[in-house]
Image (cartoon, protein in one colour):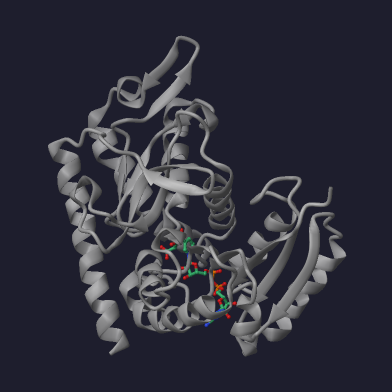
Length: 332
Ligand code: NAD
Ligand code: LMR
């Protein structure tokens, strides 16, 4: 029996993440190798010609799962009937810019796109915000799309999660797929807290704590954390452009695990609406460890938080509270 295609919106599709992301979606990396998709690509009028070029390439690549492409600069047309919305469109951070510098440029975009999604997207559309400041853009989107369930609005911290897995794998010279259950707490910014307190590595002698295998607390509490926190800036410095292939791949990981479920015994990090778990203020979009089942994520509960971690969870929450206030001041 034919499977109905899923409509996936990518905003900012003519940009560099968009260019890496749309072929991944069309190849089944996001929703699996049997799920047909219809891509909706949105960009702004100055990028219309480039967007059309991306559409031409998608047609030329003859992806068997790709059942249609909508390429438009009309927000309503782009949002109509979409089941998944990956919000990449916005103004990227350039070398030397702090994330707060891009705040005012982006929150007004997210306010207006919230209304378009609310009016035109399919019921139960799942939203992933990638564009920075990702947590706060997602919060603005949530606040201005009150009829979209708050559990459906998330932001990308999976890239940071994957970066943390990558750093542990490099340090221990183990397969990245054997490392699991790192956590990114908080903001997708340099205050995020990459936490390995509960992370493990699969070894020939069974699952071992990362802390035991690394056995260098100074590194785990120092360089490891700062490397992950600063990785976005390091990529910008090296490429003169922000990360794109890793961001696109992580966006696919985020949606895939949300929709299709997390593997048994494994959690991932997602920026989600805080319900006050771990004494994180409710009403922020904050990155937590989550599992997902039947398309519904849940925050992993009852993990022990030591004093070192507590301070870090609070510091990144404080930054998000400040960002929220700043975002509202930009909108008024
Ligand atoms: P880019 O400049 O290459 O592409 C952005 C695209 O968005 C451009 O094509 C632009 O025309 C388009 N755009 C601008 N305003 C728009 C609007 N109102 N509606 C639709 N499209 C619009 O940037 P990029 O490198 O692809 O990065 C995109 C965003 O993702 C940036 O904000 C970047 O900082 C962020 N980012 C987030 C993560 C993460 O992990 N959360 C990682 C990397 C990058
Ligand atoms: C990243 O983490 O690579 C991006 O969010 C770039 C940035 O603006 O920090």
